[in-house]
Image 1 (cartoon, rainbow, N blue to C red):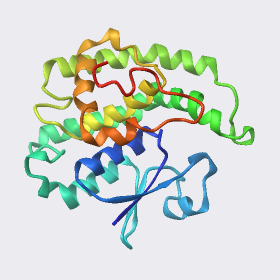
Image 2 (tube, rainbow, N blue to C red):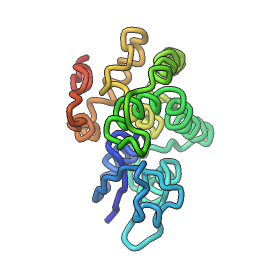
Image 3 (tube, one colour):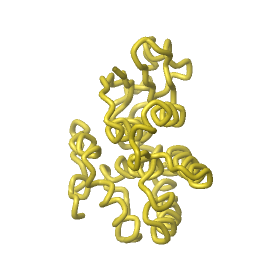
Amino acid sequence: MLTLYHHPFSPSSRFVRLILSEYGAAFEEHHVEPWQRPQQLLTLNAAGTVPVIVENEGPAICGPGPIMEYLDETRGYAMADRRLMPDHPDIRAETRRLVEWSLTKFDQEVVGHLVRERIYKQIMPKSAGGGEPDSAALRVARANIHHHLKYFGYLVASRRWLAGDRLSFADFALAASLSCADYLGEVPWGDEEDVKSWYARVKSRPSMRPLLGEKVLGMPPAPTYTDLDF
């Protein structure tokens, strides 16, 4: 049995939940408020960040990249043509590059600002940095998202899936990040029809359903969030 320590609106946590579901792995969830840095989390991961998984009595696997590799090494070969790590070394490298882009660069420049300012800060106590959103940070995120969507649009217009001809970890990394921004109504879908069409395909997968059912207390999702035909 796997145990996952996560936050529902952490893009990296969402990515891990998606790939756990895609690989058919049963897991128990522990919801963690990362800004609280609880002792249980620090014992598992000295960085105090989520996601973290623990399998049975084994060591903690920390961070989306190591978790992705661990799940692929322990379960990927049994997935046959549904394995999310491509066979060819070039496409494997491309998959890892795009996972890193989606969960690091896109998060640092866009999604992380949106989630922190509009979700986390509404929940966090003032002593931990909670309070009113920083309008300057939101302006930066809203400007940056157009550049990222243009690049993602270029990729999905020339490929069947984000990293190549097969569905891969890269698709779920980007979908996890976009889903957080989409909840807030912060994705300008009309700007990039290719990205919108790609996301609709990923969004219709059963692994996405638990995420689309989650809500922030007092903050309903944007109309596009649960609409598969948006």
